[in-house]
Structure formats: C-alpha cells, structure tokens
Length: 478
Image (cartoon, rainbow, N blue to C red; front, top):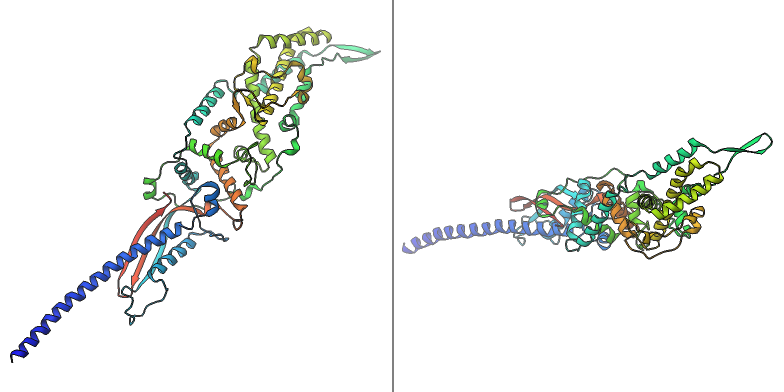
C-alpha cells in the first residue's frame, strides 16, 4: 500500500515538473523567435543597402540603391522582394518549409508581409537628399579659403554692377547721337551727293560682335568638343519618380545640405574647359550646369559671353577714369570728325571709341582666361593689355597670354555657380551624374530619381508554432 502512495505522489510531482519545463521551453521559443526575427530583419535590411550602386560610389562617392537593379522597371516593390528574400534566407537557410511533424526546427519561422512605406530618393526635396550625402562626404574638406575668395569676388562684382550695368545700352546711346546729328554731304559728281565718310574704327570693332565670342578668342575653334546630348533624357527635363522624403529618424541624424560645400564638391567631381575628365560624356560639365545647353560648344559659348559681359562692364568703368586713354580716344575722334567736316560729332565719337577699346580689352581678357591666365576684376593701367589701334583688327590684335594676376577661369566659374539659382544648379548637376553613369556597362537606363538612400520597412514574421510578430525599422546611409 505504501508503494502505491509513493507512485501516485511521484506521478503528481512529475506532472508539475514537466509543466514547468515545458513552460520554460515555450518561453525560450518565444524569446528565440523574437530575437531571430530582429537579427534576420537587421541582416536583411543591411543586405539591401549592400546592393548600393557601384559606379555611383566609384565616380561620385555617393551611396544609393538603384530600385531597378540594372533593369528597365524601377519600383520600390523590387526592393521589397529583395528584402523579403534576404529575411527568409536568414530564417530558413535551405528555404524549406518545415512540417509540424518535423521537430528539428525549434522555431519554424517564415517571413510574412514586407512593406516599405517610406523611402528617400536622390531627387526628393529639390535634390536635398543627394546634397545631404555630399555634405557628409565633404565634411572634412577645407572649403573656408575657397569660400572667402568667392565671397570677395562676388562682393567686387556686385559693387561695380557687373551683372546689372547695361553697357550695351550706353554704347548704343552714343551711336544714336551720331545718327541724330548726321554727316555732311559732298558732291562726288555733277548732281550726285554722298555723305562724307566718318571712318569710325569703333564700327569695325562692333561689327565683330555677331561673330561669336569663341570664334574671336580661340586660335583654333575646331578643337572645342563637339559632343551633343539629348537633354530631354535627363532628370532636369523629365517627370520625376518620387519617394516620401527623408524619414524622421534619419532626418534627426543627418545634417542639412550645405550649398557652398555642394558647389565645391561639383568642382571636385566635374570637369570644365581646360580641365576635362576622361570619364565624362560632356567635356565641359561645369559649363553645362551653368548653361544647360545640349552641346559643349553652346555651353562654353554661354560662359564666354557672360565673361565678356562682365569684363566689358569692368573695363568700361576703368577706361572712363583713365585720363591718358581718354586723351588718346579724344585725339582720334577730333581727327576723324575734322576730316568728316563735322566737329560736333567729336564727343560721341570719342565715347564710341572708348567703348570699342574696352570691348577689345574684354576679348583679350576672355582669351587670357581660356588660355589658363588670370584677370583681376578691377584693373589698373599696368593690367591693361591692348592698344587703341587694335580696334581696327580685333581678332588679329589679340595675343596668347597665360599669365597675369587676379582670378583664373576656374575662379570666375565658381562665382558664376555661386550666383546661379539653386534648383537649376542641383538638377543639372544630377544630369551630369546620369550622363556619366550611363556610359558604364549595364547602366544605360540609370536614373537618380530611382535611387534611394534611406528606407523604412514594416515587417512581419510567423512561426509554425502559432506565433507572429511585427516590427518597423528605418535604415539608410546616414
């Protein structure tokens, strides 16, 4: 009888002990499911970021994932499929569904719903997503000295009105005064009268204005790059794919984009006339960012014309204060009007000559800059290069000069880029990136608005033992 009591007691005790053991095992299973889910999610989301675009990193030091994965269709659904695949492989390396009868898998987990609700593509917020990465990349770059020089140049430019003064209008007013006064006539044969010719050399100089700046300042214009692109294929001209902007978690960590640093970055990664890059499609990339034309010639011509306008304003300001040059022009004007028997034209003729001389000097300045020389914004008598007689033979009187003091071509470009509106500067820069990446194998359809750097995913997982869990994670290059 006593042995029976002991057996019942042990049976009851074992029931309690086994209940405790099974409860502990089940608790361990629940904790393991959660832990494995978190590990698989972290590994999967990092694996998606590991598929960053190699060429974009190689050429521009930017980390973005291309949602098209080299294909023709860019969609966040492609990334969701990649993410789910990575999570599933980390839950079940052999990708085999385990039956309830197979107890070798203690967790029996499968990936469930994968949804990417937020993601930031490069062009979001007017390109701010891309520029945040640039700011981070350039964080240790010594931009202070460069920015100080640009700031000084912009200040000088604004103080003398290089962007605003209408020198062409001033010149045309003096020309209109000559037309209003008119020239006397003389009888060349019986009953036939003609105006006495004025032979104003300024007219010869002004006739070259329609020739195009590059044709005047370059010794061999045929050496200018002849590359042409279809601008409509690129991001600044097409309808954009859009993300949802930077998710809140990333925005708290990532710094705001810095425009001055972005401009410095462009000069590190892009070429321009005299400093072209082999990797580039358009050879004059900074000029494209400024002009937006579809040919290298068109873009370089735009910059050369703008330089000519700036230099002409600065040179007119100087020459109208140089008494020696004014005296030379006045002497020539008096001689011309005396021969033409119209001394009252001496004053407006003098000014047309001075404006023509400033124009000649400006062409010389542009030629010097394109040859690698330097030209100061404000000139002195020692900086002046051309003589008055050169206005009768404009192109022939320009000399090759790669010396001087002041700013060089790159520094003038930096000032132009600083003055450019932010939107066109940003999106034309992204055009350049797309042009260069599309030159590389397998990237013919590359689009920056299909590339993301941060994403937030809602994930779920289920277990064959009846458990399911959900979580949200935000990952990115920040």
